[in-house]
Image 1 (cartoon, rainbow, N blue to C red):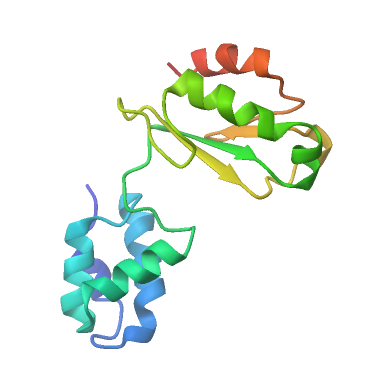
Image 2: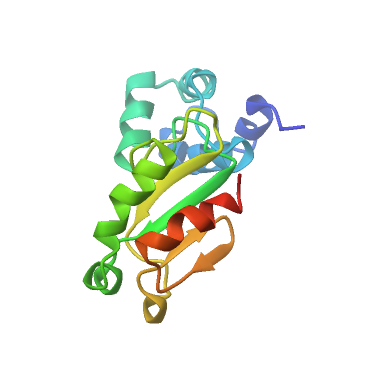
Length: 150
C-alpha cells in the first residue's frame, strides 16, 4: 500500500519551499507520478501556490503529471540512434500504440517516451521497454516486440 502524502511530507521542513523538487521526487517515487491531490497537499505544506508547483513539475522532464502505463517504452533519439534512423521509428510506434510520443495508451498498457540517450550507442537505434533492451531496431520488428507485452 502506498505511503500517504502526509507521511512523505513529514520528512521535509514545513514551509521550506527550497525542498519542492526533492518533495516532488519523493512523491513520484512512491506513486509513479504527481497527482492533482498531491500538488494541493504540497501547496498547503510549503505554503506556496499550486501554480508554482505545476510550473516546476512541467519544467523538468523527470516529472509526470499522469500515471505511466504498465509498460514504459523509452525510444532513444540521441545522436547515434538518430544517425541510425530512430526518428523514423517514432511514427511506427505511434501507429502501433495509437498514441503520440509522451502519452499513455488509452488502455493504460504503454507509455511512449522519447529519451536523449539510453547509453547503448553500439546497439543503435535502441529502445528499452521496462528493463528489456532491443538494439539495431527496425520498423518491422516493432509489432513483434510489442506483442510480448500485450
